[in-house]
Length: 99
Image (cartoon, rainbow, N blue to C red; front, side, top):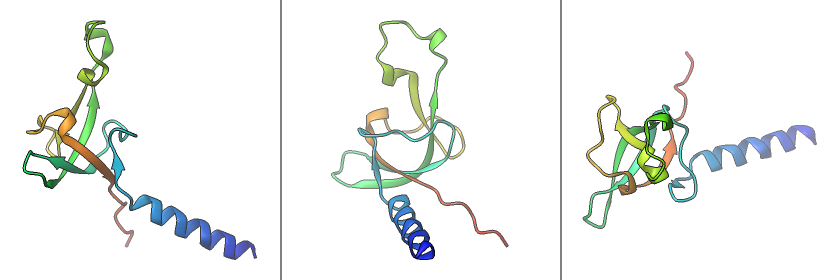
């Protein structure tokens, strides 16, 4: 019975790891590459690999909106073409297989 529970837990984990996460509900961890779904204004989402960075709040004015301390970077670490709110969903990138 314990083996069956372990298998069920693994299935649930794999299922939830493949679900797109709405950026309005949760942001990815900073500095970790993730798959992004970006809205570039054509009523369609474009895939991209990027990461979220957070600026040091000591250098940000107290009147600045929280999201202005965050920025999306592309996979090369450069500023993203899209604005912060254009990234609609994200998905963790799975680990590479061990060989």
